Image 1: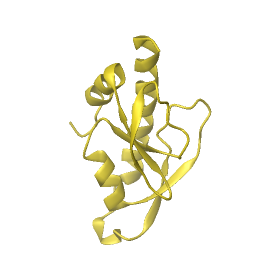
Image 2: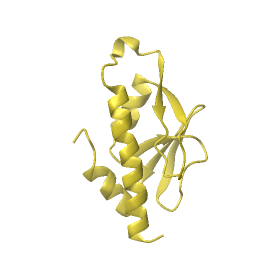
Image 3: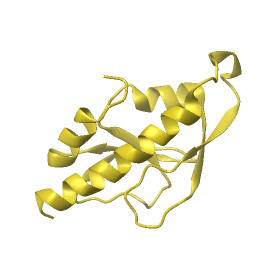
Image 4: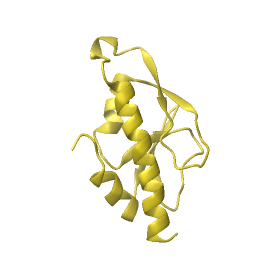
Length: 109
């Protein structure tokens, strides 16, 4: 996969991360055990699935700007690798040009 495609996919995933940061706003860790719906952060065209995460699960993924959560099976192995599989979601880490985009667009940086 060429760098332009990898960057485009990384940009799409980063856009979904921004949406999820908006969804995260206003929720407190007092609700730590409650699951909240977030947008799947995959690069699969047309995906509009939701992933339910607790706030500690969400924050664990956000602790690394190259990591994204998604529905199992939505990973794109040419641009990312799986770092964790959970019952409700999978965590991937961007590689190469996609990692650069993820870092450059991190809303928490």
